[in-house]
Length: 187
Image (cartoon, rainbow, N blue to C red):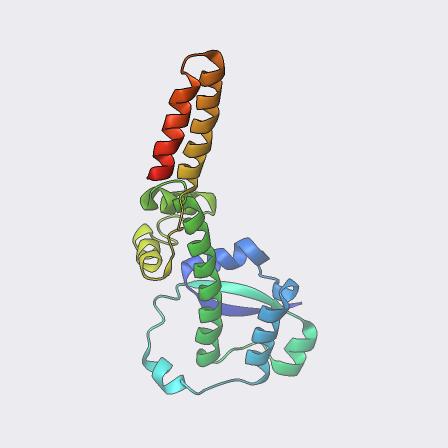
């Protein structure tokens, strides 16, 4: 097996290594594998002039991606600058989609700041790899807050169980529980 060097952003490098290993073996993901193969087979230089002026300072990491010997001998091991940026965008979109979904899940149970910090901790994205501010900005623009809070449903169900228990023990009378449920439905 041969490897291809791809300049990537730190969080994309982390996403690649977490999902596919280091070097990244994307053969288990046919869609991504075909995308890379297309970039090797049919190099694009469409935006080469635009990207030639672009400083790749954001792409501070180098990720290694495994390519088969067949692809290596047929198509080569290098991507044009246009294809490198295009492939990076595909990986960035996947990483951001993953982040938005996880943060949305966490927001169902906690505030946004804690949700982002939990995401960074659980999936090993330290501040120097994927900053809190960057995640927050992207989530504010493209993320979605859940329509309902699981915490509210959890409290409601727990409250109902406690009221049932208190009613059975005689701490509160059954009428109290009925009146409470009517008030809740009226709201």
